[in-house]
Length: 84
Image (cartoon, rainbow, N blue to C red):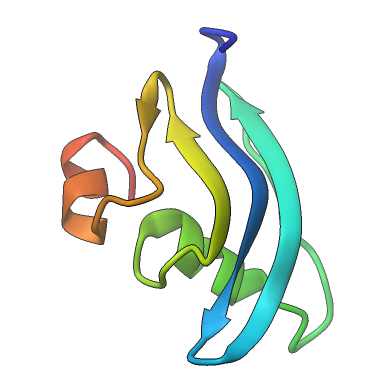
């Protein structure tokens, strides 16, 4: 992994219960940069943020923070790594 990447998510899917809201979304954010998520109401912006932060389960895909795989970690465990 490129050491300059602070956050990376590959083919992330998730949602609420049986309902998948975010499907196969990928992206990354380098150190010192920000990523803006834009879209109309109801397209999954908040759901993506909840998946990335660990407040919702990632049904598929992988999330990494620096060198750490955080996909299976709870929101509290991610926060301890500096992610919130």
